[in-house]
Image (cartoon, rainbow, N blue to C red; front, side, top):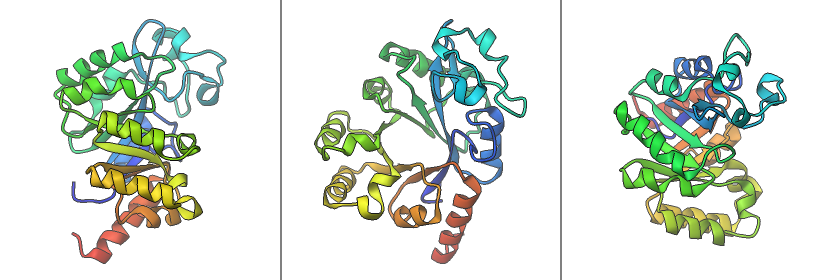
Length: 252
């Protein structure tokens, strides 16, 4: 993929379409995203589904939890525009092979022993080259790295509240393909000496820098010259900025 930084639709094209739905993913591709980011949870009947959080109220107005309900019930919930929570296996079957896919594993409903199951689902479909497995719960990831998949360590803003020591320990322990960082911690006045040192170490270790969630032109311009990927709610704006930057560089 020649476009850099890559543009990934955050939970699909979240700004305009119901997040983590097949519609949101299709629209992200349609409007020029290089790929998408999505989230995986597990239902009460041990099926894997594409949705961000265990609680359902924000996306569906229901007071229940993904982990406490069967998929038979969950698929009846309307997320908007007639869209429902997709099964992970159906999501995998729909993936275009020329897009970059960041799959985030969520520890609200999943445990490390789910990772080999997810890995087998990927292998069955021959999905590997453009797949990145990530999580805030880093013990999910070694099984994928051992199998030759890219892994990304996700970090919250709060992970850097007490400096860069703990994040660096994780980086050195897991040696990921990428570090997936909160944009607000690494731009503007927050890009202090310690944050700069963290970035330099990651680059020295040849790790890719991925930022979430990049939604403004200012944020994009601050990181576009070195980020591998930006994850965004606003696909069309980021694609426009990407094309403008590539034109300036004479990239066709």
